[in-house]
Image (tube, rainbow, N blue to C red):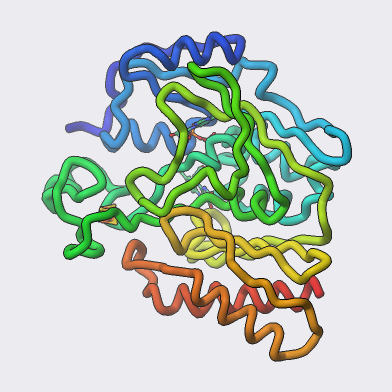
Length: 312
Ligand SMILES: Cc1cc2nc3c(=O)[nH]c(=O)nc-3n(C[C@H](O)[C@H](O)[C@H](O)COP(=O)(O)OP(=O)(O)OC[C@H]3O[C@@H](n4cnc5c(N)ncnc54)[C@H](O)[C@@H]3O)c2cc1C
Ligand code: SF4
């Protein structure tokens, strides 16, 4: 298989209803900014018959105040989100948007595409011939997981930066599909399975993200090899609440993960040590990158404790 784009029909609906109708066609898939989708097309990891470009749908654009909170269209770009004055009230979100990939990517990459970004693994994000020479793998076209050969589920890592940053602010998604519209809490949108990590039904798309008023200050911190461009090896978002902190992770599990940490805040070392331990426990990095899982687990916990101290 070459690295040329496969044949497909491109459609550009003007409304959400038209997009839903287009997605009902055989082999239809969504194209937003295309910063990940185009790579997948070239690598033979996505083979759509119809690509539904959602870039011309007005309802999916714009950031607007909604009561005390915010509504963000799913096709809003990360560059505009990072500099949006309303979005800045949610510091973890603006910080996460500003550290995705490089400026050229962020100019077209969307928040919806980021939330639906496919999970990543050393054995998966490769060319067709590379994967073929390895007998493919359990996630796509193969039968064995090279990361955990005795297991029967894919351990690829969810590596989107925005999901944890939104989760700590209690975001909900507005989803449209053949059955109409529904809302779901972002924290319940994912499942821990690298091959099927989204709970989107066939033909559904994210239309918008809704945020309540920010509960308190927040921040996002990220570990990566090259600061100028890379995916997170591990990323953590924290929001200060009346109780203590809401914490969410990315890059370490097959879905973005809220950390269960119900310890009332106290400004002493024992509190931050307990927070660090809770993050270590929740993080479950696997051999899906060239960086050792043990290092990623310790680093994400240290990063979380450091960020919590700064916010406190
Ligand atoms: C060199 C490089 C570095 C990168 N670094 C990072 C990084 O540091 N952090 C990071 O998070 N990402 C990174 N990415 C991945 C990607 O650029 C971002 O995740 C981006 O936000 C994806 O958005 P997009 O609009 O381009 O999505 P697309 O590539 O268009 O789509 C991504 C997926 O989402 C689906 N999708 C898109 N919109 C919707 C919607 N509204 N509803 C339902 N499904 C939808 C698509 O069908 C596709 O499966 C990197 C990519 C590259 C090439
Ligand atoms: S974790 Fe296993 S099944 Fe999943 S992409 Fe990697 S090698 Fe494939």
